[in-house]
Length: 211
Image (cartoon, rainbow, N blue to C red; front, side):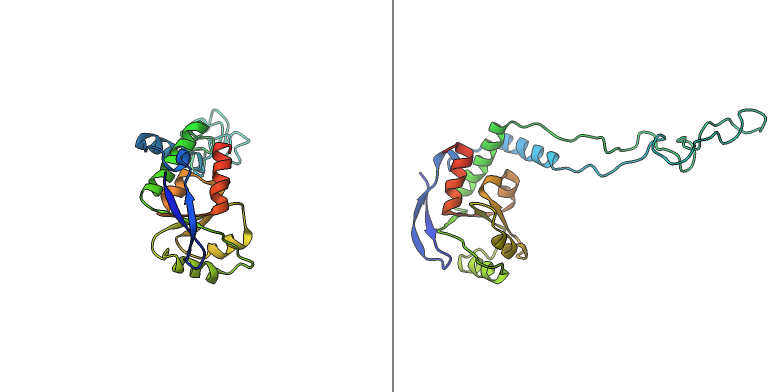
């Protein structure tokens, strides 16, 4: 079992916490992690590029000129793709779907593998509690400096959404915060250091293991 020191915001060790083996001691399977990362990125992808076809271009309600007798080629609509300003043939459309299906068990196992990797490399820190009564960036910046989190990307995991903490962290580069029930593999892999509160660790076990 992996045990980590529990610190207060001043950096003093106030106890120890045993990490849940089913979450923090899972064997790494790179192929599964890669599959879930690709799927999560694809599911978050926004389809922006869209070219109008002839049915979406404005105008063209009448025939440009009569069918015969003008000496010109026959045309039925100025919205035709061969006209300047007409519709686009085979252009990108917003109807494209890039989503990939990943079942819950695979997604959770990949999350546990990423957390286990951080635990094995001693990249997980546990705080006794994190309470901020007013949103001030200076408070969190001081905590990060005291705990030695100044270098590298850090993710704070808290029990539940807290506006004061979120606003305090928002303006600090390379530092983010997530509630325990919103953990995802991209967030874990993006940050080298993960800081849990004691309450958040309990919440993670409740959410992902049903304890």
